Amino acid sequence: MRLPFLKNDMEDKKPYQINYGFGKGYYTERLVEIPFLFRNIISPPAKVLDVGCWESINSISLAMLGYDVTGIDMMPYGYKHKNFTFIHDDFLKHDFGNEQFDVVVNISAIEHFGLLSYATKERNDNAHIEAMGKIKKLLKPHGQLIFTAPYGVHGEVLNFERIFDDNDLNMLLSGFSIKEEKTFLVDRKEGVVEVPKHKAVKIQHDEENGFYSIICINAFKV
Image (cartoon, rainbow, N blue to C red; front, side, top):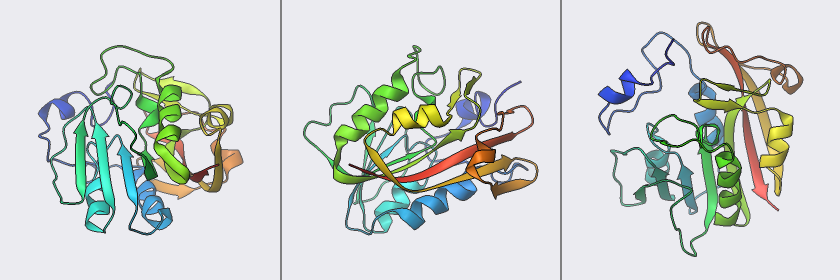
């Protein structure tokens, strides 16, 4: 079994090709993650860091809306804009100097850190923890974090992504005050629907049948 839009899809892709799975006959969490981002992000002007921006229109869309956007990814990115700076690098290894941001956007990215997916060469079981620590340092006091990730029964999918439960999130989001959180059930055959958190956390991720839950969080550094 191979995960949707991985391996062959990635090998065939050119940098400018953005693909959320649309047109392939299945639904995706992007249908709710993207509206959650744009509904909750603070108003421009604001300095935004998009961590893991490859295959996403979020960075370039925010730049066109007047935000000062920096996107970083180990994979290439094909869009350009006067308000957008792309850093082609490993987030954990990149030196940002003294730079800080009003907002950090992390849309379904942190769960992949340190696993052998995308351009990662060596496994690091603590990479997601290290990444969140770096995000906190890069945020200005009271800065905003827009965070989405797989949610449910703790686990891992084929060395591709982690599934976070409440214990994981409490650790990762230590030092943040959560203003809003929403949980959704994703059924790739039927659609995406909001479900109560107490139900979402009990869902076992089933990649083969395209059935899992996610969480979307709007938080601020304290």
